[in-house]
Image 1: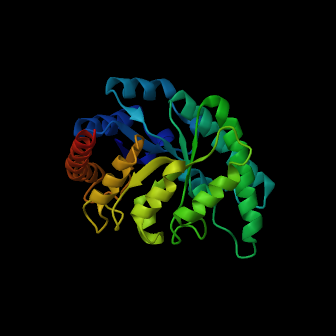
Image 2: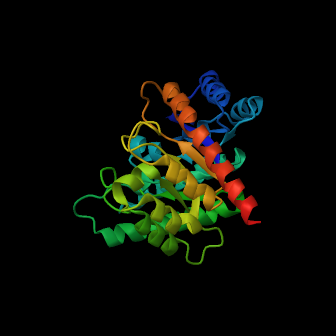
Image 3: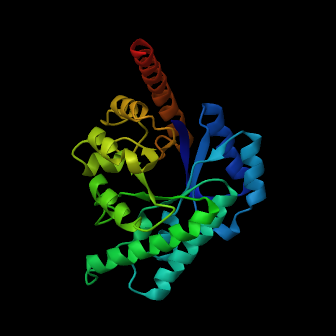
Amino acid sequence: MKLSFAIPKDLDALAPDEFEAYVAAVAAMGYVAVEPMINDAQSVDVVAVRDILAKYQMKISGLRTGSIYHKNGWRLSSPDPVNRGNAISRLNEVIVLASRLETNIMVGLMQGHLADDEPFDQAEERIAQGLRECARFAGPYGVTIMLEAVNRFELAYHNTTSQIISFANRINQGLDHPVKLLLDVYHMHLEDPSIPSSLIRGMPYLGHIHLSDSNRCAPGCGCIDFVEVIKDLEAMDYSGYATVEVHPVPSILGSAEWAMNYLKPIMEAVYNRLKMVHYLNS
């Protein structure tokens, strides 16, 4: 498992020196990647971003797309074909950018809030069709769409791990390059009866993990059992990114440092314990 830190700004809105400051700071803490948000993919200076990442031997673990919805109102569920088309086009632009940065994209809030008079079954089918279209576009670029279950206070549907697994299976019918899951333990804490059981259920579909505590602050600041979470992920040989995505308390870099200091010893202890178990059983 590789630790990444979520930058709380859009990559297209970051000047190169500001992006470099984030990358340099979290690299010094021990993170191996950063995870910015994105709105306008075509405004990103790809050469500058690549050069900064190479300088610090860092990666981008993914591009979070919620800003596209927040800033433009474009959503995959929209009954307006122009709005929905804008959402799909913007996601496809992000896919092209992701391929140039050797990463993937995340989709959660871009499903969109529904108006009171919008039937859910029709909206869900529009989301599924839009994501199928984007996944087909992403395949030749080697980019995977990570679909996130979001809690009920932020989105009124697709809240639980079971619901997002069922929806992903529906999307992936007939796809050569399937959508995978992004599971966030904060949303799981709010929606799932058991985080460990949901991780086990979601593991065959899992592409990415987000880590934050029950209060959306850094791991170790709330009541989620991260020892159990990390034990489960290591036991199931999860080798992807785990991104710390948290509120900036006491500050954004302060939360990054707290999370690393809390998680790193747990990860090392769990890894060493599992290695010993494998040795004794061999």
